[in-house]
Length: 227
Length: 219
Image (cartoon, rainbow over all chains, first blue to last red):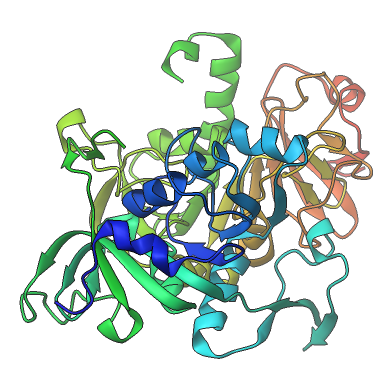
């Protein structure tokens, strides 16, 4: 399979200062193996765009322990005390984006659309400095699309072409993130032959996926053991 | 929450959840926020509603048995859930097409403050490090109807219903209703209207613990 790479080769695709789009909602649908590689690396000044920063010491939370992050952009960091602490200490920049705006901005980034007007956050601190415009008597704000240097997604299975299927709500941000990075890397539990995935179940067509990495964690009792 | 069930706080939370449940109609698509709103499914009786979870599910079912837990089938509170018959799965951008596009009939959410016209503050406290907004602002902007389920007073005993917000707003869109352990309020362009008292308080006593003026009956 051309797209299959070893997890140890993944870091060659990441440069210092890159913006990484990372799928996941909490720890669900999160590329835990790729994050481990990043956490063990000497990469620095990375910006991560993701809904959360995992949990304390887990998932993207591991990157807070190594100091490779310069900035996090997402909707909800409050529940990870390490993120709050890093921000309080001035070690981490944080940009808050409402969850629906985050999803739509990444969708636009992958769809060749420069930005969009939304009613979300009108009249709030989040809207400060953003262009306002009225459509049919209602006020909207302009939000710019989000694109990344590298997208890291987590799927349940890939076929050897790179088509992806997801596990239930593990789909979350992965579908749009797979469209919005210059390089897209998918971490998966299982790789199957072309033709084994039902066309109806494929959510991310292979055109978006550049590389596939096999997950190192085994799922037991509904959880990735040892992650 | 189980350990709190017998306490006054637990009973008051249940009372609020039960009263909000009365507002729900058969067939509605509903998004429930964290806290008190998550208690509502236990008090629906025979009503059939469809619970939307913003991380990508319409038709959220009850908590699974331990052996059926899959941490890739979770609620927006990141707790394991099941899927009801007729459930569907989708990605985050489609989920907010549903929410922002006005396809969700009702959002029930908590609040830190609500002003007399129903403007909500539910994401940040001035001077405290709150680094999360989640889907609150999208729900405020897009749900067809918004009910706030909240205790009448904040932890510091200050009223949550106030004349003007001192906490950061969650958006210009107003809530329709507020249910507390003491009362049900409706919001209109004219301000707050008390429509029902749920405790043994008199209207005058209620005015004393409420930060906004409100009308009652034919006043």
